[in-house]
Length: 278
Length: 279
Image (cartoon, rainbow over all chains, first blue to last red; front, top):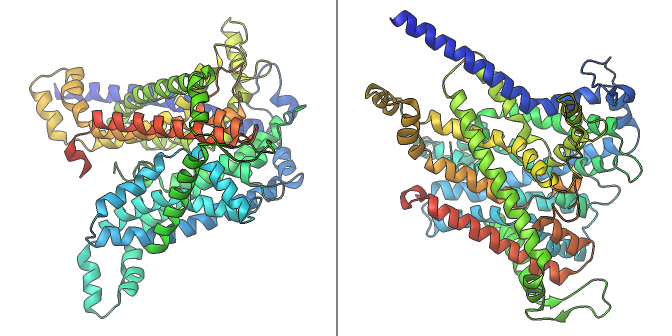
């Protein structure tokens, strides 16, 4: 009896595994197709019968890196996303730590206000921000993006860090006070190391959002300060769309983010829901 | 705490208020008269303009359909992954990847795959015995296609939330129902679904907020076309502000959009959440 049940259960698991594999391939398919196209020579990429396994070549990647300005755009993206992530973490921690530790009047309201900022569509604030940045002469400069991405990521970092700081037991911190450590020393010496996995995951998410951002980057950057997503549009001209290069460049945009997402997997749900679902 | 807060206030309050004030001016950067007080002028034009209501309708359809489909598929996938099976961890890690792909890349990639001449999707369509379809260019096809692309990218997100929520349900609740002899779909309907109310509310609210602002995808694929079939709110505001330079009009437009997003999201959350969820 139990043997039959176990066998039935195992069969169900196999069925589920097969269904899940098929569905996963459906979701992965487009991305695999992008990578495989990036590895093909032009004639293989556009053949009448799609070739899944053409002889692979790195030509497109070499082209994307050496011709035009895409390599530079990747550098700009790395710079803006990296710097704004650091800034958002520092400013965010400054708000998140008191929210997690002290009883402040109106604390709940403040937290919700910060969260509610997420609801404002970027298109609503883009014209004033554009005019404002133009007045101080920052349009066309990478710094405008650093500033905007920092702002864009602050609600996220505040909410996530608040949760991760709150997870650190209060007693551990208090013990370090007894040992004579100051607030700041106990924060950097005790709280930060204990919350580190969460902080790293928060940083990764902030980085991903800044790295992928297009609307602000498209409007605020000039010819020399394009980020990678804007750089991609360079391959689309009215007369021609350089598909092979787009797929190679697209792969380069996606790859670092993928690796990050896989590393932060465990925190991804918590991060993407702003800590609402753990 | 202070520097961060000042920064937030500066970048959140100032632009929104500025935008509100601007929305009451007639101000086109191409107009030599410059900035002139217009009162309700911009709002008046907008609310009487069929093109405005058209873009509201396009956006609402886009948002509603993609979110509903994502919820259904995401929940289904989560139920599939709920019980362990060989290889589930690797598949789950692979499944979540579409949502971290930059929307710009998503747009270009699908445009490539859906191309009427050499796209792989149309190859499959032809092999199945149908004629090739210009998915992004043919009237009637473009909006559903964009919805499908959104579904492809964001179903994994809903799936991850639903899976986390399912795994948080205490096993004994399900076991007790099973011992009582409840049928699987009864267990799902009576015992699982009520416990998913909060995670569903969060997932849908986040997707609502995000889907309303769709811009990158449209920029890379249809640019509002064919005709005006995919002219969403974000796209029209961009068009008014950065192509016609009609700043006052665009500001009024964006405020109407903000109101719409806030109303839809809060009404939805009010309906879904109870007081105890907010603590």
